[in-house]
Image (cartoon, rainbow, N blue to C red; front, side, top):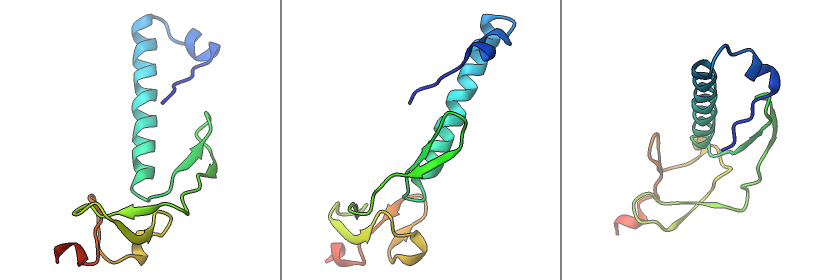
Amino acid sequence: MEIRIDFKEITNRPNDLELGKFVREMYWKQKEQYLSNIDEHVRLDINEDGLVVGIQNTDDEYESCIVCGRKTKYKKSTHVDFRRGYIDGAGQACDGSCRE
């Protein structure tokens, strides 16, 4: 992850403490945004202004089962509403074949 700040953002902070706080907040916002994208199983390309500029291609990648680790029949680009065995907060599980 890379945090970029410009000259104006630096000079608008009265001291190093405020600048450090500003950079730390930018980091946590960017990390939160990144993690929120993972749950949807779609990676977004976001520019430095915070705008979505594209979607990274994950069409050829299949999900792995969180129980047994084998590849499932679901691609990462398949929305979770159209999958069997998906567990919110955990990930994709097999349709039961890993319990056999």
